[in-house]
Amino acid sequence: MCVRTLVSGSVAWGLLASTVMLAGCAKHADFMEMRNQLSTISRTQDQDHQRVDAAMRRLEAVERSKESDPAKVRFDDLTARVQKLESRLVKLEEVASQVSAKADATTESRASRSAKQTPLAEPTGTVSGITPTSAFNLAYNDYLNGKYELAVAGFQRFIKDFPGTSLTPNAHYWLGESYYNLKDYGRAIHTFDSLVAEYPGNEKIPAALYKLGLATAETGDLGRSRKSLKRVLEEFPSSDESKLAKNKLAEIR
Image (cartoon, rainbow, N blue to C red):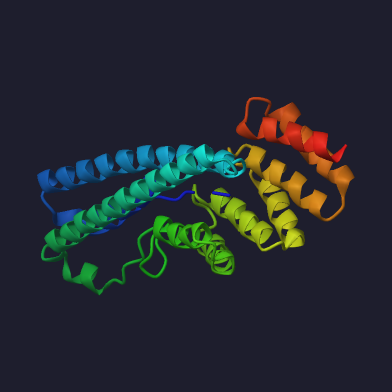
């Protein structure tokens, strides 16, 4: 199972880019202060993004073996930690928006008449006022709450609206997980296949290959299942999925 959920550094720099277009007449000191604020927010967001990703990977491993009570307690604890980090990222996103709004207000009165008449492009990284992190989190929260059909719709929309962000590979992975939990193994296999083909160096590849092994086993294609599981063992021997793949291989031999 298990995000990403999260504001990447590109969001903060996208906000900065929109500020620069209006900042021609702004005081240099004000601009530098706002740029430093956005830079700090960006670094903090990236760090929290990494923490959430690490916590989610642990959640995946724990969920697969949570039959015992101690594992369930640990799973609940990790879930709480992920939700806490998500709340922190949402607050950082609000701060970034406030800084951008402040910059817009500062430069608006100084902009030339011609600049005011020129339509401004939508800031990079946002679609209809929603950031990639917000869109991803909405879909991921539906997944966590077992609303897999809503999660499918959310991740599909995310991939369409934000095809080139750092969260896009994760969206593909969780879309596949959502299909898998709906027992729609055909679409799950197609989604995991696409992730492996399009993002060969991504950190979600071991998990995608492992889930490919499970999904193809569910369809009765044991030959392909073994192939995917063996790839986990051979290409990612130190991954969390390696031991799981080894155990699954033992089951289907």
